[in-house]
Length: 150
Image 1 (cartoon, rainbow, N blue to C red):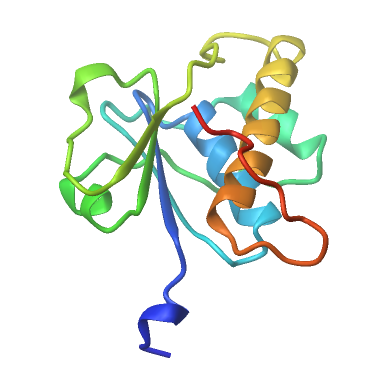
Image 2 (image 1 turned 90 degrees about the horizontal axis):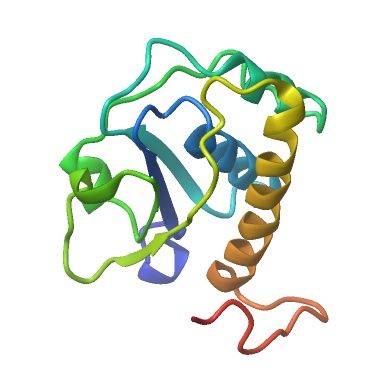
């Protein structure tokens, strides 16, 4: 399958530590897109390990992030992605023309307990559902127009 039409859209999630928000977003997109979208995540200054409260919050929705590790942001990861979604990474994210960039303003779950991480998780899930609609061809009765633009 090397035809242009067979190429899956690819998304890179970037935050500073790649330990909470970007990992939750990547896990949701991987799960909810059922393999239709290539998913990456990285951090400009990766932490030593994933935020345990984020792991616990995702486990509550049957998504296991316990084996994930924070990864360093590389220019290659940005180049290979169609969409780059930043979450508080500021000016440290490389910019390449022709990419779709979005900045999702989300509370940082660092240092917070699972009760505080749940609303962040739920907001990320809602944004991911909209992202999937924007990246995958409309199927069945899901022909929504104009949603999520802006």
